[in-house]
Image 1: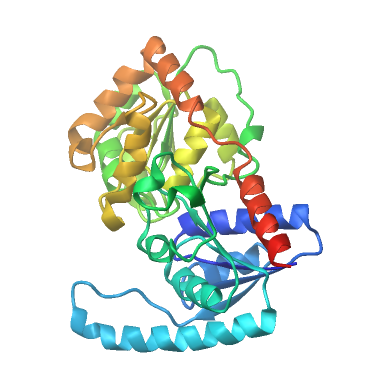
Image 2: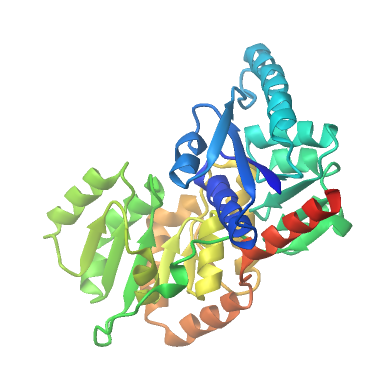
Amino acid sequence: MRYLISGGGTGGHIFPAVSIANALKVADPEAEILFVGALGRMEMERVPQAGYNIVGLPVRGFNRAQPWKNISVLWDLMRSLIKVKKIIRDFRPQVGVGVGGYASGAAMWMASKMGIPILLQEQNGFAGVTNKLLKDKAEKICVAYPNMEKFFPADKIILTGNPVRQNLLNGVKHQTSNIKHLLIIGGSLGARTINRAVAAGLNDLVAAGIHVVWQTGKTYYADCKKAWEEVGSHASIECLDFLSDMPDRYAQADLVISRAGASSISEICLLGKPAILVPSPNVAEDHQTHNAMALVSRDAAVLVKDVEAADKLITTALDLIQDDKRLATLHTNVLTLAQHDSADRIAQEVIALAKRTR
C-alpha cells in the first residue's frame, strides 16, 4: 500500500501527520509513505527527522491584508499543483491523507481530481480553512471534537480525537510530601502573555509554598530567567526553556496552565489533568477559544482570557490548586472527553479506504 500524507506549517499539523504515519507502519510494515509539505516550513525538517521522505511545494498562504500581493501567491499555487500532479503520478498512492495547512490544500485537491480517495484530519474545534474547502471531496473526516456537523457533512465525520505523544502515559509521579505541583506550559517558542503573568506573580507563587515548573519556551527564556533570579532563584520554581521529561512533568502536576492548541487539549484530556486554558488570540479564526470552550462548557477546564491573564492568571491558579474538591471535579470531567488510540483508529480508516481502492 502507498499513502500520501500532506500538511504542516505548525507542530499542531505535523505531529498528528507523523503519528498517523507511524500507526500505518505498525499496521502495515511494508507500507510506503510519502509526505508533501510546503517549502521553507517546519515540516521540511521535522518529517525527515521522524524517518519519512517529504517533497516540498512552493505553496504559500494568501495575504489577506494586502490582496494585491497575491498574484505571486497564485503563481506559486499553480506551480504547486503541477508539481504535486507529477508526484502523484510517480508515487501512485491508494489514499491521500490531509491534516491541514497550505500544502495539504494543493495535494489533496489534486489527489481527489485524479480519482484518489482522501481522508481529512481536523485537529481543532473550529475547522481550518483548508479542510473546509476540501470537505466535499473527502471520503472520511476524522475530528477531535463532537458537534462538527456545522463544518462538515455528518455522514463523513468520525470522532477519533487527536493523536498525542506516544510516551505521555508512561510518566512517573514522584512523591514529594503534600506539596502541590503547578505545571506551566509555554510551548516550544513560548507564550508571551502567560510568561509575563508568571513573571509578575513569582513572589506570590513562592509565598504559596507550591512547586512550580515554568516552561518558558526558547523565545522568552532569557527574560524569564532574569525575573526568576531577581526574586532569589527560589528552588520551588524551576524555570526551563524546554522540558525533555514531559511525561513525568505531566504525571507530577496537580494543575496545568497552557494555551489551548489542539495537541495540548488532547493531552490534558487523555491524562485527566485539571487545567487553566489561556487561548492564544494570534491564531486563525480564534480557534483556540473554540478548543477551550469544548472543555469549559462541560466543566472540564477553567478559562482565563488572554487579555485578562495579567490580572487573573496567577490568582486563579493559586485559588484552584488549593481547592481539592474543584480539582477532583475537573479531573473527572476532563477524563470523559478523552479519545484513546486516536492514531491507530485514524490509520484503520485510511487502510480501509486503501483496500477499497485496491
